[in-house]
Image (cartoon, rainbow, N blue to C red; front, side):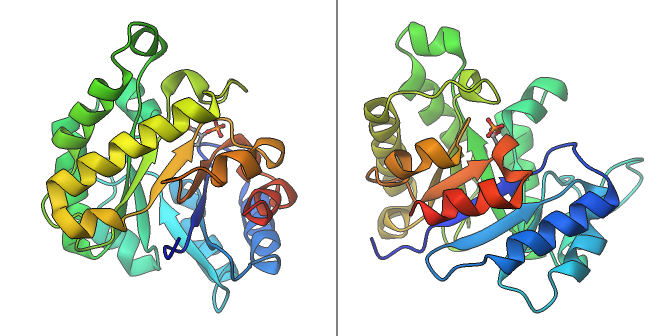
Length: 246
Ligand code: G2H
């Protein structure tokens, strides 16, 4: 309550240029007052999607950035480049990047610092593995990731945390609503511990197999301030259906 929810689409490594701009236009056509909508296309599609979204009420984000402001980093992209093309947000520390590229909490923190320095809002992802969930360590793991990944200045910039249990990503499985609520309450407590009063209003998104059919229950939970959506963000109808569940 009081915080405008954020419904974010993580397009991952999907689609053609034509599909990306059509999807962006489709999302923009259904933009709603109830939520802030954000789309995060792959790097090569950012500029045309930015053009497709010009004048529309949909924010643009990237899926990663480098920790350095510039330099000899072949194949990488600086936060300032993203800001310059019109991005407002950048997803950092997604579990797929933590797994595919060995990104540690310290690496995610350095990237978040670079994002803040460039004027981007970081969306920092955390979440436990299935083994960690089964052994009862999920909350401790997530608290550790938050402590290690969130830089100073995160709260002042309105940083976003996305809780994505690794075993729920793209699998169609989700935690129970009670488990989501418990984890989000824990994340809220950690944010307040780290940032005081400002931690109370930072948005905490749930991610992992969110779709129109389960969005209503998840988005109604306390301390769930929106969703980070993968698979279901690739069709405008599904993505907007999730926002409509608010
Ligand atoms: C979790 C999510 C988006 P999906 O990674 O970040 O993907 O909704 O496909 O589980």
